[in-house]
Length: 173
Image: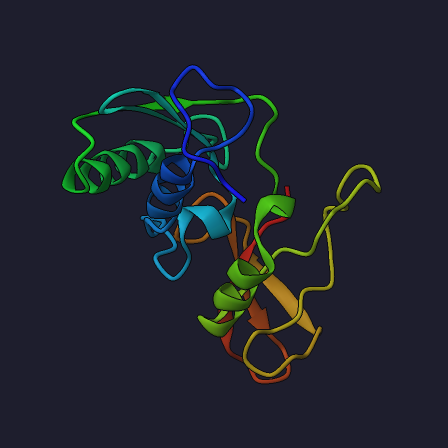
């Protein structure tokens, strides 16, 4: 059970930190608004630094991701609206984000929105370049890459050869 402790206490998250992390994690991803930053796995941490002072850690999906600025601004705005006057959002690049950080709920929401979610890569080493990707419309694995890049750099455009529908595929990293 969470405790309510002072800012110098390092024994674990406080009730307030957990509440603020949930708030920050509820921010929708600007490029994939059907999933939250928590579900995407880019929210790495939140700490209370003192009264009215919070630091949030975000890891972008790739170095130079233009959405990180929008994510940061959205988190700052939401926490300000909930009474936190000083919010610092820090970009953390290590360890790097991978598609394994996307939660099961995030994967479900991607597929429900017509985007083929990445498959978990686990600890099996490098990801193969060509993978059988399941169509989110009909479930067929008979799909073709139309473009290595889609609406964002982290997605590819594919077409299902069974139902002939195009769809985005969130690439495995």
